[in-house]
Length: 315
Image 1: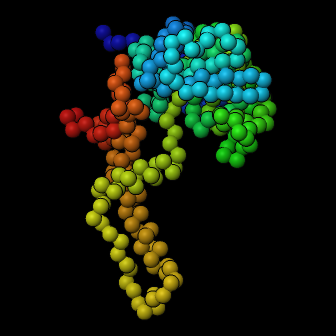
Image 2: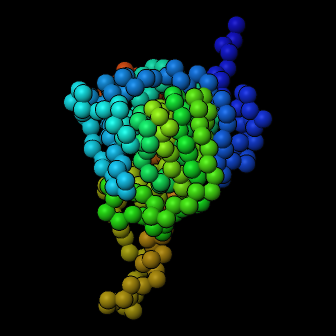
Image 3: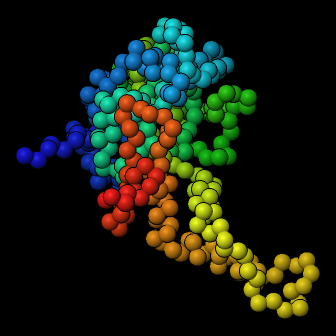
């Protein structure tokens, strides 16, 4: 008997996966009520508090008081995090690596390339807790796991959008909400890159955030250059044909053409570029930490299997 397909957020929605990818993905937000009703059983507050005590787990507490914000990085000593102090949020990264139940949630997003998923962050917030109005450069699915949270969505932002100076977080200085939603357990809100959003807990709240890898162009070029260092360490720059007119301090166009040729040799080699990109995008997020659920990032390209940053020679 064939195994049953994993549930997706669209099973009880008038929007199917094809429509979502064509009309919403990286374009506009989407709210789906009861998209993943089993999310409320994924993890509880005490489990999050325990994870935040570990040196191997990335965590932080954000506290809001009036218009001031405070951020404390983990790990935390037992009893330090209060479940009752208003305006407080605990954020724990990559919970999917520590909880097999949370890790299973990624199967619900099998309509997207698996190697694009970064991690599942889980946040617990007391009443009025949140991290303030902000925007992300990556896609995120916000799934309500317990309690309620009010989400306000604003306009599109970019690197030129004004931020609050001196704040410990990248908070928007002029956030104007356009839409507002109150999420209950099982509800899901998709927020594409660049959309301003602000979440505030109504009572005690747990939110699971499925985030996606979105490296900057500078990060891509930096890693590609590093990769080339190992492959091209003995390949040196050579001049184009020179004449006496090329003497002196002037940078000649032929030299620039020569540099372009060097770069095009890399960029135009599709297989070489794909091999590097597959290794880069499947590299573990925490390579030096042993977790309850080992990182398993994989990608296939032309019959080759890449897993955790390497080509699988046994495949």
